[in-house]
Image (spheres, helix red, strand yellow):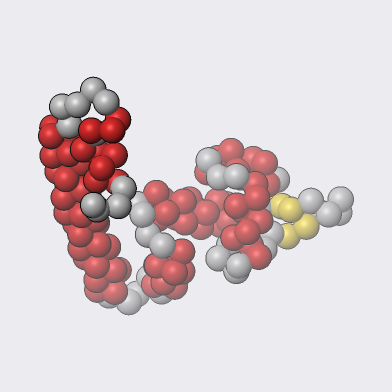
Length: 130
């Protein structure tokens, strides 16, 4: 299949597919006589894996590691499990940080009863402390 079809099937931009090839994350495709990239079902499977990993929030470094681990079907999945646990811990930290951020902003909003910018608690909190 050509790059446009692969892009459509995986909901990936053509330029992203080319980037993955340049970075060695996705193997380079064979070329047709007309010098078009010709992708196989193996490319489709690998790109689907990459896209799903990225959708779950894994970094490109983590995706590389996951791909390396996935290449050896006989090894135990403890490495993948550990990566998933670490990723969940990072997500939990982000959720905690966002929850605190939301609470702080909500508190500022609740305390802002002025109708004038000059007396606005949110603007005051964003500016220099006086």
